[in-house]
Amino acid sequence: WGTGRAVARIPRVAGGGTHRAGQGAFGNMCRGGHMFNPLKTWRRWHRKVNTTQKRHAIASAVAATAIPALVMARGHRINEVPEVPLVLSDAVQKISKTKAAVEVLNKFGAAEELQKVADSRKLRRGVGKTRNRRYTLRRGPLVIYAEDNGISRAFRNIPGVELCNVNRLNLLQLAPGGTMGRFCIWTESAFKRLQELFGSYKAGPQLKKGYHLMRPLMNNADLARIINSNEVQSAVRPAQVGQKKRGIRKNPLKNRNVMARLNPAFAGKQRNAQLAQVEGTRAREVILAQKRKTIAAAKKHGAASTKFYKNMMAAFNPAA
Image (tube, rainbow, N blue to C red; front, top):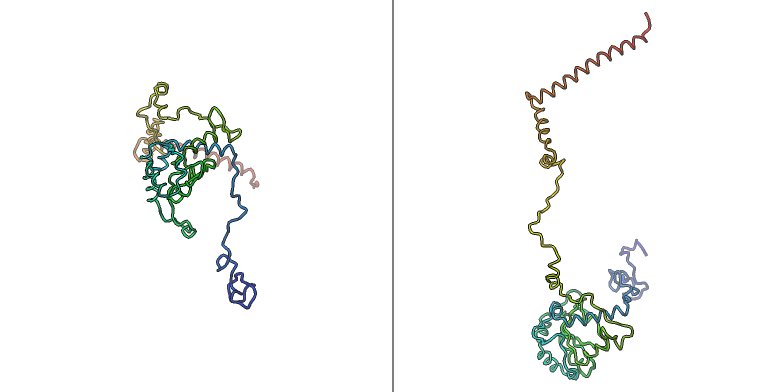
């Protein structure tokens, strides 16, 4: 296949007897052809992470859910929530109707959070609209339970609400987008289960052999309080007021004012050089006198040189 057929040089379907034969069908610009630069199935999709490192990450994410400042900084509306973390009785695990689940959330101050999620529903950008993910939503509360006695069916249809078993805590749910501080709603049995899963500083967990919780590097993480404390302020030097600004360093070879500050005689030399170019000035007369003296000395030396040269050449002239 090549030139001389009065058609484009594109790979075509072989054979005959059908309309399909002869059609271009393999290039990425053809109908029925392959896509350009497809994703490689042998790409390294996953990365190995140490087990202890993953456990530390989940423990840190769980601890962050109990700090109201981090939860609010993540964008959750918890102004009406009575406490953080919010722990409910195990009777919630037996709820099987969505209507009852919504009533429970509204009763414990999560109505504003659900309204925020509902208002955030927007059309997705790009081709994802046609791939069964047409809309995007903000993340709402995460309900963590110990036993599923109908709770998953009750909460799964509420926009923004996600569920997770305490034995299968997921870092992608505890810290979506890598930002810790998810608003979590715990059941009582799930909250007690954390002791068996992660243990404490005094004793290790029962379900994770050889694992110990990370110890904090700082006993008090309130940096503002530490810096403003009397102990620290008494040791540091006082703040400098009215510091002199450093100006731009200028090149004295290009800036006359800077050169005049470095060399006081520079201005006088510049002035004398200018006067030496003006007729009738004393500096001009001095320059001319030096030039006349130099010219006279050159003539005197030149006459002697000429006489020496003639005498030397006369010795080579043939005698008459």
